[in-house]
Amino acid sequence: MALPEPRTAAGAAGLAALLDDPARAVVALDFDGTLAPIVADPRRAHAHPAVVPALARLAPRLAAVAVVTGRPTEEAVRLGGFAGVPGLEHLTVLGHYGLERWDAATGELRAPEEHPGVAALRADLAALPVPEGTWVEDKGHAIAVHTRRTADPEAALLALDAPLRTLAERHRLAVEPGRMVLELRPPGMDKGVALTAFLREHKAGSVLFAGDDLGDLAAYGAVEALRDGSVSLDGSGGSDASGLPGLLVCSAPATGEPPVAALADRADLVVPGPDGVAALLTALADAL
Image 1 (cartoon, rainbow, N blue to C red):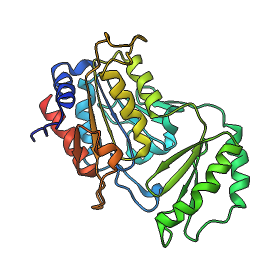
Image 2 (cartoon, rainbow, N blue to C red):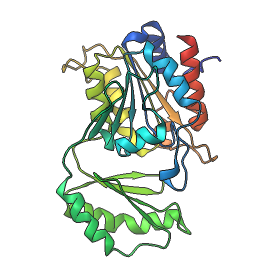
Image 3 (cartoon, rainbow, N blue to C red):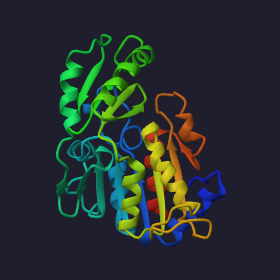
Image 4 (tube, helix red, strand yellow):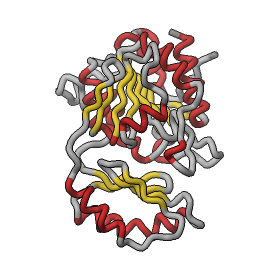
């Protein structure tokens, strides 16, 4: 299977660096919409069937593979089918945007104490009028309000935006928008912060990041800052810093909807949903 060609010079350089020195490369991937198709009930989402076999072939040749997701870590591990797979010893799942961490090599899960604002938010949400079909997903360290099942998901999301932001401000929580969902979670951590720390930990020589929704923009920003040299993994930065090669991949919706423009416009490579991401991972494994 042939590798697709990035449409940008920066992306081509990122891919070349990964292929030239895979032992120093990190592949980081969102879960929903990237490794797993978007479904009406997120509890029924599962990784694309070709993803785990591709990662099991790919991971031993890389510095590390990370799944960076807004989901609770244990849930992502279960739905992804990542536990106990030979070849995935170098896999890490960074859940709740990096608040939680699970390492395949040890099976250890690390998680912080619950933010007090999340507990207070639960009581307020119980009394908040919501459109019929709205689903409130309690993730433990965060609460997501989904409107995909309502009669008019976009109108429902718009109607809930202001009251949910008011509650978030009251309880000192951040609001993370996505496709037909608003998530309220503790501030101070996002996919960009989590990804940068992970790359620093592994002394990465290159990075590939793939995502599909607004929550992935922070990771896009982190990769862009690292490759233009404004941020570096040794803590320095500036105009003289040498950049970290990186490839940004956008997973377009498998439903035929247009991709999130904020990602697609900045991506070096756009692929057709989890099918395309699985094919890309398989082609990388073939190439290595």
